Length: 114
Image (cartoon, rainbow, N blue to C red; front, top):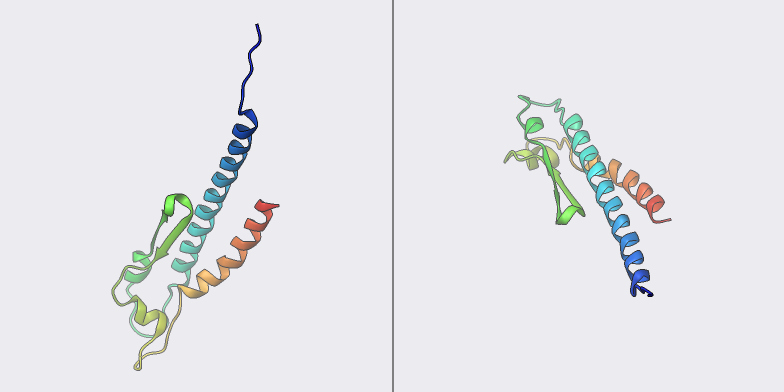
């Protein structure tokens, strides 16, 4: 009696591909949460009155089935802090956090794909 299994090569390729996708999801979550932490650290506003509400409002979540991460403040006035107005200077805290983490994420993603 002989048993043959067809499609084993396809299954093996698929498993390797899925493992890689899970690694990417882990990487996205790691760097997304690090970016969120940097936003909280950067949300120190030196000009004007500060209560810490914007800092406490910064939350993040995994989106797009694990291939994306959204983080940011939820206060209605946070864009005024980030970009400024004609009456106050900008005190950016979101973009600098993103820019700093972006380079680290790209570097680790390149390592993962090699």
